[in-house]
Length: 296
Image (tube, rainbow, N blue to C red; front, side, top):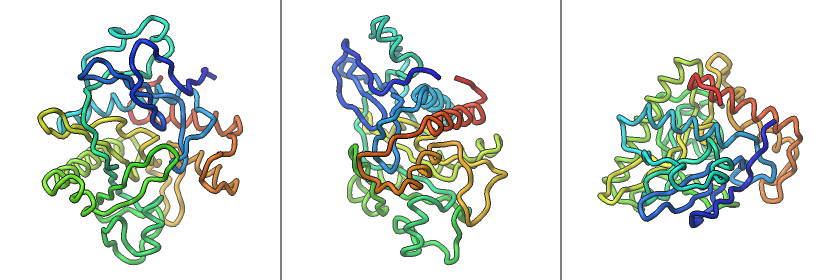
């Protein structure tokens, strides 16, 4: 298996932040270098065991979706290349996993779209019959398709903390009515467009989360990762059965294994067996190949 990159080490650029998966460096005043590492999270906790080549898959998939969805909303894409700012040694370290993007003002809301009921949405629905303030019909089952996709935002957590589902009014209070409505509209349009394409490839996008930022003119931009196995649930279209979680092309495999260990969802995290690491790598590559037609 390929050697995993748990943490990047770029000396030629100022380090801005290390997120759960991505390391961010400043490139002048108008751009960032984003490095997708092989770190993986489960239940919003960063695991000690990386998934080899995961960062390259995330980068390749995000670039694919940014191009496919560019007609809907501007995004963070920049035509600048890492070769312009990194040494040869640094380029080898981050090959296939680094991009230079526009520097945007991030909107600290997870813009989640759901077309099926699962995950934290299923837990909320069983408790109160709604998800993020969206009232749903009674009697829905796990993995059931919703009548129409819904916008269910969450508050983005710092590393080690769990994201918290919030309602639409929370978004309005944070960013204002007009921008909140634009985020909701764009989120659902992106999800619907991506879902129609994915279904043509035999995949259902059960849910996904987008992140947005504003440029200097205040225009909304799509940023960070887009429709990857880290930010989405991808299900084989012919394996969906109401009442059970379908198999998936994403990190749900890791989450399921951790649940079986009785882990309390706080650090430290149980070490992943080599078999789980290898199978997760395979699932990420399957998602890439099935949805984009590309291989790493």
